Length: 222
Image (cartoon, rainbow, N blue to C red; front, side, top):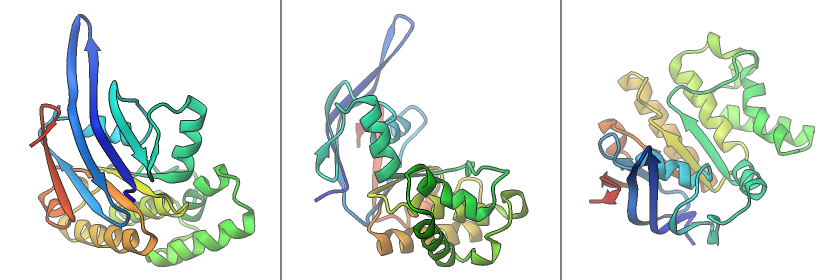
């Protein structure tokens, strides 16, 4: 069963009097543990797919399935709960909470999900060891390098054991060596935890390391 499936997905946006087609009949599946890259010029539909897959937006037509279950018609509250429990996010700008320590940032999604404190401590410690940051658990983000902060973001995304991780330009602000390390970590942890990665990127370094690449143009798969 695919972690994520899009079937005949269409999405349009209205800009004043104009209707802009963002996606026009997009179909693809993403298997557990697979890393799939979306590439294409600005306006090709990458961000729209991320928003739909992340349950931030809904399609005008077509189906979106998460772990085989249709999600496009979920109510706002049900979508929020599913996003909280089954989807992790990794951003180019890291989006860490600056006043929290590394451990607190990684713990936060578990706290929001109501995971008991003892289990949270164990899972956070295990994830920080997995990403090589256990010695930085009490540091705040501003004491870390860009690569270390991105590793914290990956740990935060994976600690809740999601079916799907959505990554938006995760290596764009990293130097080549650090980007390679982050990519290797994403693949390693994705395979270890069975999480599927859906990545939007222009970074050729990342495209060459993904299992599959989907090129988009004008809302269609090329």
